[in-house]
Length: 212
Image 1 (cartoon, helix red, strand yellow):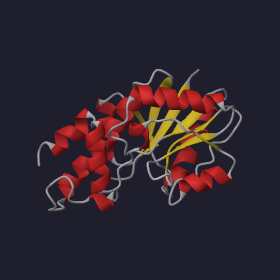
Image 2 (image 1 turned 90 degrees about the horizontal axis):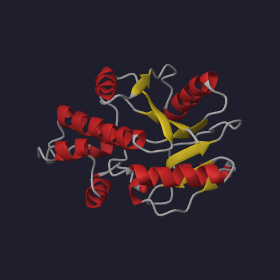
Image 3 (image 1 turned 90 degrees about the vertical axis):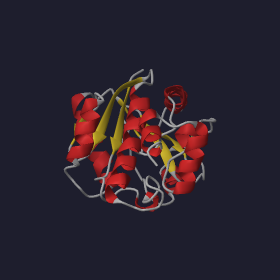
Image 4 (image 1 turned 120 degrees about the horizontal axis):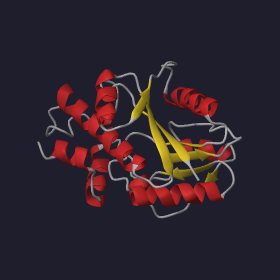
């Protein structure tokens, strides 16, 4: 089994607006916010790349600061050439992966899973592959999506955004039911970040919060 994962990352200035102030005691400085958003992405891709069944992680991003930091972490990036939103970026990345290897299983993760553990991701991906088709994992609210997987011969069909779990379910993707708290804990708000802290943050996000 080999799976290639796509992780789209928005430009830092536009990302995670509901988290603004979480990295500097509520001040909301742009530099502090950018450090936090970048740390979330670095912890996500670092954990994903360490999963045993993941062959490679590709970040889709055109923010040069993000690309430089991920390159330091050994993560390949491709530009978000469509620049038309998250789902467009994922379709662009999927096309590039499948053009290189028609046999590949493709997965997608959001860039905000700082408590993700490689072993959790391994179990979730194995469960997804075992379904024989497209499969997805919901977030802790059961409304969003934190993992979407499609085997060779099937398009990823991303429907990320509000109520994405219902949207993915409506396309025929199967919902995964395992207990993977780090995988389900995407961080959009300060409350989400508190939950992630309780699960155990990756080193990049921990370092940012230690500065407060």
